[in-house]
Length: 474
Image 1 (spheres, one colour):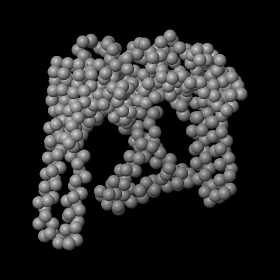
Image 2 (cartoon, one colour):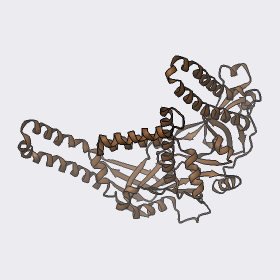
Image 3 (tube, helix red, strand yellow):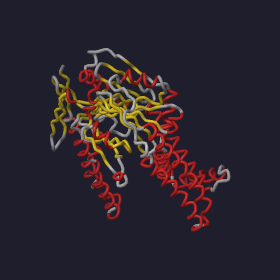
Image 4 (spheres, one colour):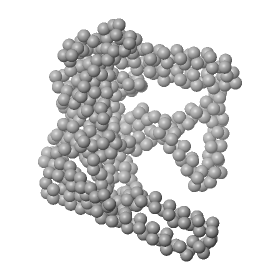
C-alpha cells in the first residue's frame, strides 16, 4: 500500500504563527508615522505594510505546500521546511505509539493531529506530527498497525460513575486555580478593569458571608482551593469521558475524550511497565487506578494517563488480566526489614513536629496573625497526617516480588502508593543505596531504573541488604 498527501490547509495558520514576529514592522512604522506625519503619513506608506502581510502569507502557504507525507512499503516519509528542507524517514516497525487527536476547535475543519513516536524520540515531543483531514488519518493508522489482520479480543469501558470518581480523587487545585486566575485577569483586560474588580469584590463579600467563624483570609484561601479543585476535576472528567481500551493481538488501543477525542495505538512489546496507584482515601474505598508507561505515550500534558480508573476488586484484577495477560502482580517475596520502620516514618514525624513547633513559636512572634496562623497550622496537619498514614501503609505492604518474567515493586512516592509491574527486559539498572544511618545496620534502599521517557525510578525502602545482594547476584 502506497499513501501520499499533503498536510491539512489549516497548517497554514501554524506556519503563519511562526513568522508572526514580522508584524512588528508595520506596527513600528505605524507608531512612527503617528508621531511624525499623522494619518496622511501612515496612508502614504501603507503599501509597505501590505507587502509585509503578503510576505507572511506567502511564506506560510509555500511552507504548507512543501509539507507532504508518503507511506511507501514499510516506511513513512515526511518532507517539510522552506529554507531548511528536511526529509524524515521512520520505519513502521520502529513506531512504538501512534496517536490521532481530534481537537474540538479543529472539528469544524475536519482536521486531526496525527503523531508517531519511536524509542529515539525526544522526551517532550513526538518524532512525527502532522495535521491531516480526518478521512486520511484512519486509513494510515490501520495500515501502520495492520488493524484489519486480527479481530478485537478484549475490551473495557469504565462507567461514567468511575470516571467521576477518578476526576474527583486525582485532581489537584493548582491547575484549576491557575485557570481561574487567568480567566479573571483576561476578563479585566478584555471587558475592562471595572469588571475584574467587580468579580474580585464579589468573591471577597462571599468569603466574608460564608466564613463560618473562620478568619476571612483563611476562608478565602479555602474557597479558592475548593474552586480550583472543582475546575480541575471538571477538566479531568472532560478528558477521560468515553474512555475505552481494546486488546487486539499485540496492540492496545486507548481512546477517550468528550470535547477533544484521543486515540492511541500502543504495542505491547513497547510497554515499559504498568503502575497500580492508590492514595489513602482510595485505599479505604478499595479503589485502584492503573497507569501505563510506554515510550511516546502520555508525554503531552493533555494525554490520557490513567487507563483503568477507580476500579474495585475483583473486577479491577480481572480487567487487568484481560488487557495485560503477561503483566500479573504476584505477592511480595521480600518485604521491608522488620526493624527498619524509621526509614518510613522519619520524614512524616519530622514534618508533624515542625508544624507543632511553628504553631507554638509564630503566634508569639506575630500575635496579630494568631488566628490565621493557628488555622493554617491545623490545616497543614491534615496532609502531614496523610503522609504519615501513607508511609505506614508502605511499610506494611511494600517490597519486592518476582514472577519469573516480571518484577513487582510496591512502594510509595509522596501521598501515593504504587504497585509497579515491570518486565525484566525493561530494567535498565539495579542499585542498592544506603543512607548514613543505614550504613550502621543491615538495610538498604532498592532503586530500580526502567526504560521510559528518560528513565523511571522505583525505590523500595529499608530492604534487607543481604537478601537483595543474593537475589540480584551483586
